[in-house]
Image 1: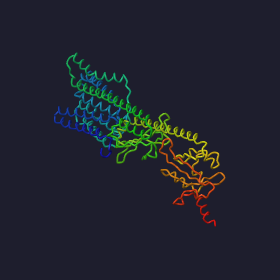
Image 2 (image 1 turned 90 degrees about the vertical axis):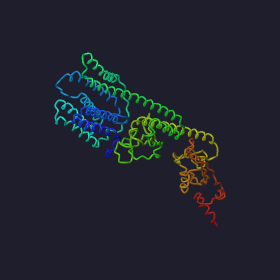
Image 3 (image 1 turned 60 degrees about the vertical axis):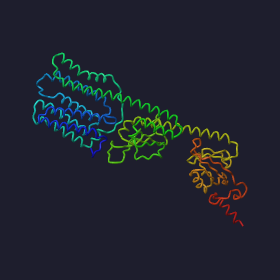
Image 4 (image 1 turned 120 degrees about the vertical axis):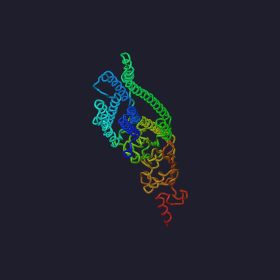
Length: 526
C-alpha cells in the first residue's frame, strides 16, 4: 500500500485483518479449539463486511451499493432455504458448515461485482480466485478431511496477498461520480421477502417438529437484517444529501440572479461550494471569469468536456491522492463555453470532489449564465449611454470620443468628423490611426496606462494637413456604464504660432513631433 498509494487504505487493512483471523482460526482448529476457531472464522466475515462497506462508501468504485445489498440479502435467504430443506436432511454432505458456505458464496458475489465494475482488473480477479478457493475447501473439507482439501485456503492466502500487491489495487478505491439509483418496487419486494424468509423457515421447522437448524437460521436472519438496515440507512442518507444539494443549488441560483457584478457572482459560488461539499475536505477554491486569470497545469482531452482532473503534486498515481477538479464556465442552454472562458477550480480530496462533480458542473453553468447576464446588462447600459451622449452633443462643437479598453473608438462626436474632414470613421478605427504617425506611439502609450491625463497630438486631415489638439482623457474602465476612456479635444492651432497657444511644458518631447519641427523653423528663420 505504501508503494501504490491507494485512495483509501482502510479496505485493504480490513481484508488483511480478515485473512489474519482465518489463519488464527486454523491454528486453533488444529489444536482442537473448535469454539475459538468458529469465533475467528465469524470474525473474518465481519472484517470482510466492513471492507465491503469501505469499498462502497461515497465516491468509491461501488458507491451504488443498493443493488448489491438486495442481491446479497436474496442470496442469503435462498441459500438458507436450500440448506434447510435440501442439504440439511441429507447425510451425503458430511460435516459441511452452512455458515462457511454461505459466507464464501457471498464473497464470490462481491468479487464478481468488483470484476464487472472494473472491467476486469487483476486485483479484483485475484479476490475472486481466493473466494472460490475458500468455497472449494469449505465443501471438500466437510466431505473428506485431508491436507489436499485445505489447498483452497492456501489459494485464498496467496491470491488475496497478490491482490494487495498488484498495481491495479488502486482502481478498487478509485473515486467515481455519484449516480442516484431510481426506486423500483420489485427490488423493495425482493428485499422484504429476503428479510421474511428466515422467520418463515423457523416457523416451518417449529410446526413440523424439532428445530434442528436454529444456528443457521439465526445467522442468516442477522445477516439479512443488517443488510436491510444498511439499505434503509443508505436511502435516508441519499435523500438527505439530495435535499441538501437541491437547497444549495436553489439558494445559489437566487444569489446569482441577484448578483450585480463579478465579485458578487464569485461570492455566491463560494458560498454554494461550502454548502455542497465539506469545507474541511476542500483546500482551495478558485473562481475566474476569464481564462487569463486562471493558470491551469493541464487541459481536457475532450474540448467539450464539462469537467476534468488536474492531479496534485507528489508520487500519487492517477485516481489517488489530492487533485484539482476544473469545471469550465459553460452556457447551459447552448452547451458552449463563454467567449472569455473562465472556470471553477477546486482542490481537495478526490473522492469528495467526485461525489459532488455533477452538482459542481451545474453550479459552474449557473455562474456562466449570471456572468453573461451581467455582461449583457452592461453592454445595453453602454449602448444607451452612447445613444444619450450622441443625442445630447449632436449639434455642439465639442469634440468627444469614447474609446474601449482595446483602444478602438466606440463613439465619436460629429465635431471630430467635421474637424478631420471625414464623413465617417473607418470600422474599428483607433485614435492612433487618426493622428500623425510620429504621434501614434505617444497616444498608444498614454491610453495603456492607468489614470487620467492630457496628451498633445496632431490630427491628420483628409487633405494631408494637420491640426494640433489638446486631448484630455479620463480613465473610466472600471465604470460599468462606460468601460473605457472618455476623451475630449480642444483645437489649439488656429492661426497663431503653436507655441503661443500651448501651455508651458517642462519637456519639449511632450509636444507633437511636427510642432517641434515648426518651433525649430520659427527660431532659426532669420
